Amino acid sequence: MTSDADSSLSGTPYLIPSDSGAVSRLEIVKNRSINSRTKAIEVQGRIQREADDLLQPYLAAIRADLVAESNMIEGYQWSAEQVREVVTTHRELLNQPTATIVESVRSDPRVFEALGLYKAHEIADSWADQGSTPRQFEVRALHSLITAGEHYAGKYKSGDNEIGGTTLRTTPHWDTQRAMGELCDWWSATDADPALIATVVHAWLTHIHPFEDGNGRMARLLANMALAQNSYPPLLVRSSADRGQYYDCLAASDEGDILPLYDLFVQILRRTVRSMSAPNYIRDIVQGRLLTSWQNRLAMWKPLASAFMGTLNHELSAAGWSCTEQGFPDVRSFSLLADLHAEGNSWFLKVLNDSHHAEWLLWFGFNSNLYCEAMGKKSEYPSIFPSVKDPSRASVHKFLYVPANDGRFPDEIVIRPLESKPCIIRCGSVIRELSIDDAAKYVAERLAL
Image (cartoon, rainbow, N blue to C red; front, side, top):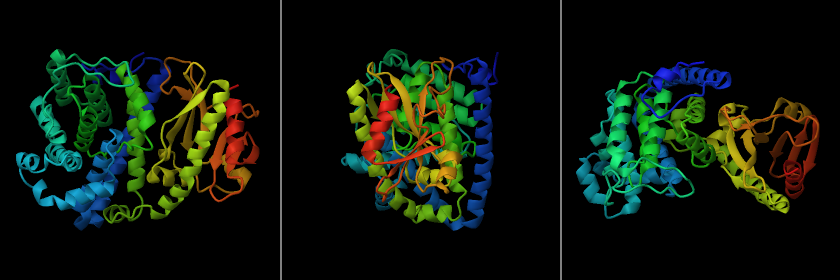
Protein backbone atom coordinates (compact mmCIF):
# COMPACT_ATOMS: atom_id res chain seq x y z
CA MET A 1 0.00 0.00 0.00
CA THR A 2 1.33 3.45 -0.88
CA SER A 3 0.41 6.94 0.24
CA ASP A 4 0.53 10.46 -1.20
CA ALA A 5 3.41 11.19 1.14
CA ASP A 6 5.68 8.71 -0.64
CA SER A 7 6.47 11.13 -3.49
CA SER A 8 6.54 14.15 -1.16
CA LEU A 9 9.19 12.49 1.00
CA SER A 10 11.27 11.28 -1.93
CA GLY A 11 14.85 12.46 -1.43
CA THR A 12 14.51 12.71 2.38
CA PRO A 13 15.54 10.18 5.05
CA TYR A 14 11.87 9.75 6.03
CA LEU A 15 8.95 7.51 5.27
CA ILE A 16 5.38 6.87 6.32
CA PRO A 17 4.65 3.26 7.34
CA SER A 18 2.63 1.48 4.66
CA ASP A 19 0.14 -0.28 6.95
CA SER A 20 -3.50 0.80 6.68
CA GLY A 21 -3.53 2.39 10.15
CA ALA A 22 -0.62 4.71 9.39
CA VAL A 23 -1.98 5.62 5.94
CA SER A 24 -5.36 6.41 7.49
CA ARG A 25 -3.71 8.51 10.19
CA LEU A 26 -1.69 10.35 7.57
CA GLU A 27 -4.86 11.38 5.74
CA ILE A 28 -6.41 12.61 9.00
CA VAL A 29 -3.32 14.67 9.87
CA LYS A 30 -3.03 16.08 6.33
CA ASN A 31 -6.70 17.12 6.32
CA ARG A 32 -6.29 18.72 9.74
CA SER A 33 -3.27 20.60 8.45
CA ILE A 34 -5.20 21.93 5.45
CA ASN A 35 -8.16 22.90 7.66
CA SER A 36 -5.80 24.68 10.08
CA ARG A 37 -4.35 26.73 7.22
CA THR A 38 -7.83 27.64 5.95
CA LYS A 39 -8.95 28.75 9.41
CA ALA A 40 -5.67 30.59 10.02
CA ILE A 41 -6.04 32.59 6.80
CA GLU A 42 -9.60 33.51 7.80
CA VAL A 43 -8.62 34.50 11.34
CA GLN A 44 -5.52 36.42 10.23
CA GLY A 45 -7.63 38.33 7.73
CA ARG A 46 -10.07 39.27 10.48
CA ILE A 47 -7.22 40.31 12.74
CA GLN A 48 -5.79 42.58 10.05
CA ARG A 49 -9.19 44.15 9.28
CA GLU A 50 -10.15 44.73 12.91
CA ALA A 51 -6.84 45.86 14.31
CA ASP A 52 -4.50 46.99 11.55
CA ASP A 53 -2.86 49.45 13.92
CA LEU A 54 -2.00 46.56 16.25
CA LEU A 55 -0.64 44.18 13.62
CA GLN A 56 3.06 45.01 14.03
CA PRO A 57 2.93 44.98 17.87
CA TYR A 58 1.05 41.68 17.62
CA LEU A 59 3.70 40.14 15.35
CA ALA A 60 6.42 41.37 17.71
CA ALA A 61 4.61 39.80 20.69
CA ILE A 62 4.23 36.45 18.89
CA ARG A 63 7.91 36.55 17.90
CA ALA A 64 8.86 37.19 21.54
CA ASP A 65 6.80 34.16 22.56
CA LEU A 66 8.56 31.98 19.98
CA VAL A 67 11.97 33.15 21.20
CA ALA A 68 11.13 32.58 24.87
CA GLU A 69 9.75 29.06 24.37
CA SER A 70 12.56 27.99 22.02
CA ASN A 71 15.17 29.20 24.50
CA MET A 72 13.43 27.53 27.44
CA ILE A 73 13.38 24.18 25.63
CA GLU A 74 17.17 24.47 25.48
CA GLY A 75 17.40 25.37 29.18
CA TYR A 76 17.75 29.16 28.83
CA GLN A 77 15.31 30.74 31.27
CA TRP A 78 13.41 33.47 29.48
CA SER A 79 9.79 34.54 29.74
CA ALA A 80 7.98 36.21 26.86
CA GLU A 81 7.74 39.37 28.97
CA GLN A 82 11.52 39.42 29.47
CA VAL A 83 12.11 38.99 25.74
CA ARG A 84 9.71 41.86 25.03
CA GLU A 85 11.59 44.07 27.49
CA VAL A 86 14.97 43.34 25.87
CA VAL A 87 13.53 43.94 22.39
CA THR A 88 11.96 47.24 23.48
CA THR A 89 15.20 48.38 25.08
CA HIS A 90 17.21 47.55 21.96
CA ARG A 91 14.62 48.36 19.28
CA GLU A 92 16.83 50.90 17.50
CA LEU A 93 19.68 48.42 17.48
CA LEU A 94 17.47 45.74 15.89
CA ASN A 95 17.00 48.07 12.91
CA GLN A 96 20.75 48.20 12.30
CA PRO A 97 22.76 45.82 10.07
CA THR A 98 23.38 42.39 11.53
CA ALA A 99 27.11 43.00 12.03
CA THR A 100 26.33 46.08 14.13
CA ILE A 101 23.98 44.09 16.35
CA VAL A 102 26.54 41.37 16.87
CA GLU A 103 29.31 43.80 17.80
CA SER A 104 27.05 45.82 20.11
CA VAL A 105 25.77 43.01 22.32
CA ARG A 106 28.25 40.15 21.97
CA SER A 107 29.76 41.15 25.32
CA ASP A 108 26.42 40.44 27.02
CA PRO A 109 25.56 36.77 26.30
CA ARG A 110 22.37 36.97 28.34
CA VAL A 111 20.95 39.73 26.14
CA PHE A 112 22.01 37.98 22.99
CA GLU A 113 20.19 34.77 23.95
CA ALA A 114 17.01 36.74 23.25
CA LEU A 115 18.05 39.45 20.81
CA GLY A 116 19.98 37.25 18.38
CA LEU A 117 17.19 34.69 18.03
CA TYR A 118 14.60 37.48 17.76
CA LYS A 119 16.52 39.14 14.90
CA ALA A 120 16.94 35.75 13.20
CA HIS A 121 13.16 35.30 13.33
CA GLU A 122 12.68 38.77 11.82
CA ILE A 123 14.99 37.93 8.93
CA ALA A 124 13.41 34.51 8.37
CA ASP A 125 9.95 36.12 8.35
CA SER A 126 11.06 38.60 5.70
CA TRP A 127 12.43 35.77 3.55
CA ALA A 128 9.17 33.88 4.01
CA ASP A 129 7.22 36.94 2.84
CA GLN A 130 9.30 36.87 -0.34
CA GLY A 131 8.53 33.17 -0.82
CA SER A 132 12.20 32.18 -0.81
CA THR A 133 13.82 29.18 0.85
CA PRO A 134 17.27 29.59 2.41
CA ARG A 135 20.46 28.34 0.86
CA GLN A 136 23.26 26.87 2.94
CA PHE A 137 25.15 30.13 3.46
CA GLU A 138 21.90 31.79 4.60
CA VAL A 139 21.23 29.02 7.11
CA ARG A 140 24.73 29.58 8.48
CA ALA A 141 24.09 33.35 8.60
CA LEU A 142 20.99 32.79 10.74
CA HIS A 143 22.99 30.48 12.99
CA SER A 144 25.67 33.15 13.42
CA LEU A 145 22.97 35.47 14.78
CA ILE A 146 21.66 32.90 17.24
CA THR A 147 25.11 32.00 18.59
CA ALA A 148 27.04 35.25 18.06
CA GLY A 149 30.20 35.54 20.12
CA GLU A 150 30.84 31.78 20.09
CA HIS A 151 33.77 30.42 18.12
CA TYR A 152 31.42 28.12 16.18
CA ALA A 153 28.87 30.80 15.22
CA GLY A 154 27.81 30.37 11.59
CA LYS A 155 30.18 27.43 11.02
CA TYR A 156 29.41 23.79 10.42
CA LYS A 157 30.69 21.45 13.12
CA SER A 158 34.34 20.47 13.00
CA GLY A 159 33.84 17.24 14.97
CA ASP A 160 31.05 14.72 15.50
CA ASN A 161 28.21 15.52 17.92
CA GLU A 162 27.54 13.79 21.20
CA ILE A 163 23.95 14.33 22.35
CA GLY A 164 23.48 13.61 26.04
CA GLY A 165 20.84 11.05 26.99
CA THR A 166 20.57 9.52 23.50
CA THR A 167 22.38 7.02 21.29
CA LEU A 168 21.66 9.11 18.19
CA ARG A 169 24.39 9.05 15.57
CA THR A 170 24.24 12.32 13.67
CA THR A 171 25.75 13.03 10.25
CA PRO A 172 29.58 12.90 10.41
CA HIS A 173 31.21 16.32 10.35
CA TRP A 174 32.96 15.62 7.07
CA ASP A 175 29.61 14.90 5.38
CA THR A 176 27.64 17.83 6.81
CA GLN A 177 27.85 20.13 3.79
CA ARG A 178 26.56 17.44 1.43
CA ALA A 179 23.69 16.53 3.79
CA MET A 180 22.68 20.17 4.25
CA GLY A 181 22.79 20.62 0.47
CA GLU A 182 20.32 17.76 0.08
CA LEU A 183 18.01 19.30 2.68
CA CYS A 184 18.06 22.76 1.07
CA ASP A 185 17.60 21.33 -2.44
CA TRP A 186 14.61 19.24 -1.35
CA TRP A 187 13.02 22.20 0.44
CA SER A 188 13.32 24.48 -2.60
CA ALA A 189 11.81 21.86 -4.94
CA THR A 190 9.06 20.17 -2.90
CA ASP A 191 5.36 20.90 -3.19
CA ALA A 192 4.33 18.82 -0.16
CA ASP A 193 1.85 19.93 2.49
CA PRO A 194 3.54 22.93 4.20
CA ALA A 195 3.11 21.42 7.66
CA LEU A 196 4.86 18.27 6.43
CA ILE A 197 7.61 20.43 4.90
CA ALA A 198 8.10 22.16 8.27
CA THR A 199 8.21 18.76 9.99
CA VAL A 200 10.78 17.31 7.60
CA VAL A 201 12.99 20.41 7.68
CA HIS A 202 12.95 20.38 11.48
CA ALA A 203 13.59 16.64 11.83
CA TRP A 204 16.23 16.53 9.08
CA LEU A 205 18.23 19.44 10.47
CA THR A 206 18.22 18.01 14.01
CA HIS A 207 19.28 14.63 12.64
CA ILE A 208 22.15 16.16 10.66
CA HIS A 209 23.00 18.35 13.67
CA PRO A 210 25.16 20.56 11.44
CA PHE A 211 26.34 22.91 14.19
CA GLU A 212 28.19 22.46 17.43
CA ASP A 213 25.30 24.09 19.30
CA GLY A 214 22.05 25.89 18.49
CA ASN A 215 20.60 23.10 16.33
CA GLY A 216 17.25 22.90 18.12
CA ARG A 217 16.66 26.66 17.92
CA MET A 218 17.64 26.62 14.24
CA ALA A 219 15.27 23.73 13.52
CA ARG A 220 12.30 25.48 15.13
CA LEU A 221 13.19 28.74 13.37
CA LEU A 222 13.31 27.09 9.93
CA ALA A 223 10.12 25.12 10.59
CA ASN A 224 8.34 28.39 11.32
CA MET A 225 9.78 29.92 8.16
CA ALA A 226 8.39 27.02 6.10
CA LEU A 227 4.96 27.57 7.65
CA ALA A 228 5.01 31.36 7.28
CA GLN A 229 5.70 30.97 3.56
CA ASN A 230 2.28 29.34 3.25
CA SER A 231 0.11 31.46 5.57
CA TYR A 232 0.20 29.01 8.48
CA PRO A 233 0.19 30.27 12.06
CA PRO A 234 3.41 30.06 14.11
CA LEU A 235 4.54 26.68 15.40
CA LEU A 236 4.79 27.42 19.11
CA VAL A 237 6.28 24.33 20.77
CA ARG A 238 5.61 24.97 24.46
CA SER A 239 8.47 24.08 26.79
CA SER A 240 5.98 23.18 29.54
CA ALA A 241 3.18 21.40 27.68
CA ASP A 242 4.94 19.81 24.70
CA ARG A 243 8.47 18.94 25.75
CA GLY A 244 8.02 15.22 26.53
CA GLN A 245 5.95 14.38 23.46
CA TYR A 246 8.18 16.57 21.29
CA TYR A 247 11.34 14.67 22.25
CA ASP A 248 9.53 11.34 21.88
CA CYS A 249 8.42 12.23 18.34
CA LEU A 250 11.91 13.49 17.45
CA ALA A 251 13.31 10.12 18.54
CA ALA A 252 10.85 8.40 16.18
CA SER A 253 11.97 10.67 13.33
CA ASP A 254 15.58 9.72 14.01
CA GLU A 255 14.49 6.15 13.20
CA GLY A 256 12.97 7.38 9.92
CA ASP A 257 9.29 7.61 10.95
CA ILE A 258 8.14 11.19 10.40
CA LEU A 259 4.40 10.68 11.09
CA PRO A 260 4.39 11.14 14.90
CA LEU A 261 6.20 14.50 14.64
CA TYR A 262 3.95 15.59 11.76
CA ASP A 263 0.93 14.65 13.87
CA LEU A 264 2.26 16.64 16.85
CA PHE A 265 3.07 19.74 14.79
CA VAL A 266 -0.42 19.79 13.28
CA GLN A 267 -1.88 19.37 16.78
CA ILE A 268 0.14 22.40 17.94
CA LEU A 269 -0.98 24.42 14.91
CA ARG A 270 -4.63 23.54 15.62
CA ARG A 271 -4.17 24.72 19.21
CA THR A 272 -2.80 28.04 17.96
CA VAL A 273 -5.66 28.54 15.50
CA ARG A 274 -8.19 27.75 18.23
CA SER A 275 -6.62 30.39 20.50
CA MET A 276 -6.48 32.93 17.66
CA SER A 277 -10.23 32.55 17.12
CA ALA A 278 -11.07 33.91 20.57
CA PRO A 279 -12.63 37.41 20.81
CA ASN A 280 -10.11 40.21 21.50
CA TYR A 281 -7.23 37.76 20.97
CA ILE A 282 -4.90 40.24 19.29
CA ARG A 283 -5.47 43.00 21.84
CA ASP A 284 -4.98 40.57 24.72
CA ILE A 285 -1.70 39.37 23.17
CA VAL A 286 -0.39 42.89 22.57
CA GLN A 287 -1.38 44.10 26.03
CA GLY A 288 0.02 41.00 27.73
CA ARG A 289 -3.20 40.18 29.52
CA LEU A 290 -4.23 36.99 27.77
CA LEU A 291 -6.09 34.54 30.01
CA THR A 292 -5.30 36.29 33.29
CA SER A 293 -8.08 34.49 35.17
CA TRP A 294 -6.87 31.14 33.84
CA GLN A 295 -3.35 31.93 35.02
CA ASN A 296 -4.70 32.20 38.55
CA ARG A 297 -6.50 28.86 38.28
CA LEU A 298 -3.42 27.20 36.81
CA ALA A 299 -1.33 28.58 39.68
CA MET A 300 -3.67 26.92 42.21
CA TRP A 301 -3.94 23.62 40.34
CA LYS A 302 -0.36 22.91 39.27
CA PRO A 303 1.13 22.40 42.79
CA LEU A 304 -1.51 19.75 43.49
CA ALA A 305 -0.81 17.99 40.18
CA SER A 306 2.92 18.10 41.00
CA ALA A 307 2.24 16.67 44.46
CA PHE A 308 0.20 13.86 42.92
CA MET A 309 3.09 13.05 40.57
CA GLY A 310 5.63 13.03 43.41
CA THR A 311 3.50 10.79 45.62
CA LEU A 312 2.72 8.48 42.70
CA ASN A 313 6.43 8.06 42.04
CA HIS A 314 6.99 7.20 45.71
CA GLU A 315 4.18 4.63 45.70
CA LEU A 316 5.39 3.05 42.46
CA SER A 317 8.88 2.62 43.91
CA ALA A 318 7.60 -0.17 46.18
CA ALA A 319 7.19 -2.32 43.05
CA GLY A 320 10.46 -1.11 41.53
CA TRP A 321 8.53 1.14 39.15
CA SER A 322 8.81 4.91 38.67
CA CYS A 323 7.37 7.81 36.71
CA THR A 324 9.03 10.57 34.70
CA GLU A 325 7.54 13.99 34.05
CA GLN A 326 6.69 14.87 30.44
CA GLY A 327 5.13 18.29 30.99
CA PHE A 328 2.24 20.40 32.27
CA PRO A 329 -0.32 22.44 30.32
CA ASP A 330 0.58 26.06 29.72
CA VAL A 331 -2.16 28.62 30.32
CA ARG A 332 -3.53 28.42 26.77
CA SER A 333 -3.74 24.63 26.81
CA PHE A 334 -5.23 24.75 30.31
CA SER A 335 -8.03 27.07 29.19
CA LEU A 336 -8.71 25.03 26.04
CA LEU A 337 -9.17 21.87 28.09
CA ALA A 338 -11.52 23.64 30.49
CA ASP A 339 -13.62 24.60 27.44
CA LEU A 340 -13.60 20.95 26.26
CA HIS A 341 -11.26 21.44 23.28
CA ALA A 342 -8.92 18.57 22.40
CA GLU A 343 -6.36 21.04 21.01
CA GLY A 344 -5.20 21.50 24.62
CA ASN A 345 -4.21 17.83 25.09
CA SER A 346 -0.65 17.16 26.27
CA TRP A 347 1.48 14.51 27.97
CA PHE A 348 1.84 14.47 31.77
CA LEU A 349 4.13 11.57 32.72
CA LYS A 350 5.36 8.14 31.70
CA VAL A 351 5.13 5.21 34.10
CA LEU A 352 8.20 2.96 33.85
CA ASN A 353 8.24 -0.71 34.89
CA ASP A 354 11.01 -2.39 36.87
CA SER A 355 13.01 -2.76 33.64
CA HIS A 356 12.74 1.02 33.08
CA HIS A 357 10.50 0.60 30.03
CA ALA A 358 7.46 2.85 29.62
CA GLU A 359 4.29 0.84 30.26
CA TRP A 360 1.81 3.68 30.72
CA LEU A 361 1.36 7.27 29.67
CA LEU A 362 -0.73 9.65 31.75
CA TRP A 363 -1.93 12.59 29.65
CA PHE A 364 -4.04 15.69 30.07
CA GLY A 365 -7.34 15.95 28.22
CA PHE A 366 -10.76 17.50 28.73
CA ASN A 367 -13.46 16.06 31.00
CA SER A 368 -15.26 13.08 29.50
CA ASN A 369 -19.02 12.93 29.06
CA LEU A 370 -19.14 10.18 31.70
CA TYR A 371 -17.38 12.44 34.20
CA CYS A 372 -19.67 15.39 33.45
CA GLU A 373 -22.76 13.22 33.76
CA ALA A 374 -21.61 11.66 37.03
CA MET A 375 -20.66 15.01 38.59
CA GLY A 376 -23.55 16.96 37.08
CA LYS A 377 -21.23 19.49 35.42
CA LYS A 378 -17.81 19.86 33.83
CA SER A 379 -14.82 20.83 35.93
CA GLU A 380 -12.73 23.97 35.52
CA TYR A 381 -9.69 21.67 35.59
CA PRO A 382 -8.34 19.11 33.10
CA SER A 383 -8.70 15.36 33.31
CA ILE A 384 -5.79 12.93 33.46
CA PHE A 385 -6.19 9.78 31.37
CA PRO A 386 -4.02 6.62 31.42
CA SER A 387 -2.96 5.04 28.12
CA VAL A 388 -1.26 1.65 27.96
CA LYS A 389 1.76 0.81 25.82
CA ASP A 390 0.76 -0.29 22.31
CA PRO A 391 2.76 -3.39 21.30
CA SER A 392 2.20 -2.76 17.58
CA ARG A 393 5.39 -1.58 15.89
CA ALA A 394 3.38 0.12 13.17
CA SER A 395 1.42 2.24 15.65
CA VAL A 396 1.57 6.01 15.10
CA HIS A 397 1.14 6.56 18.82
CA LYS A 398 3.02 4.36 21.27
CA PHE A 399 0.18 4.41 23.80
CA LEU A 400 -3.52 3.60 23.52
CA TYR A 401 -6.35 4.80 25.73
CA VAL A 402 -8.47 1.72 26.40
CA PRO A 403 -11.23 2.32 28.99
CA ALA A 404 -11.38 -0.62 31.37
CA ASN A 405 -14.91 -0.07 32.67
CA ASP A 406 -14.33 -2.88 35.15
CA GLY A 407 -12.31 -1.18 37.89
CA ARG A 408 -8.98 -2.75 36.94
CA PHE A 409 -7.43 0.69 36.52
CA PRO A 410 -8.77 4.25 36.63
CA ASP A 411 -10.30 5.66 33.45
CA GLU A 412 -10.00 9.31 34.45
CA ILE A 413 -8.52 11.46 37.22
CA VAL A 414 -9.47 15.07 37.99
CA ILE A 415 -7.61 17.19 40.55
CA ARG A 416 -9.60 20.10 42.02
CA PRO A 417 -8.02 22.74 44.30
CA LEU A 418 -9.78 24.00 47.42
CA GLU A 419 -11.51 20.67 48.11
CA SER A 420 -10.99 18.52 51.22
CA LYS A 421 -10.63 15.49 48.93
CA PRO A 422 -9.30 17.09 45.76
CA CYS A 423 -8.92 13.95 43.59
CA ILE A 424 -11.82 12.48 41.66
CA ILE A 425 -11.11 9.03 40.20
CA ARG A 426 -13.56 7.57 37.70
CA CYS A 427 -13.58 3.83 36.95
CA GLY A 428 -16.32 3.29 34.40
CA SER A 429 -19.33 4.98 35.98
CA VAL A 430 -18.00 4.62 39.55
CA ILE A 431 -16.70 7.85 41.13
CA ARG A 432 -14.29 8.00 44.08
CA GLU A 433 -13.26 11.17 45.94
CA LEU A 434 -9.82 10.81 47.53
CA SER A 435 -6.97 12.79 49.02
CA ILE A 436 -3.84 13.34 46.95
CA ASP A 437 -1.97 10.61 48.86
CA ASP A 438 -4.80 8.08 48.69
CA ALA A 439 -5.39 8.78 45.01
CA ALA A 440 -1.70 8.29 44.17
CA LYS A 441 -1.63 5.02 46.11
CA TYR A 442 -4.81 3.81 44.39
CA VAL A 443 -3.44 4.60 40.92
CA ALA A 444 0.01 3.12 41.65
CA GLU A 445 -1.44 -0.18 42.86
CA ARG A 446 -3.44 -0.59 39.65
CA LEU A 447 -0.87 0.56 37.12
CA ALA A 448 1.90 -1.63 38.59
CA LEU A 449 -0.18 -4.83 38.75
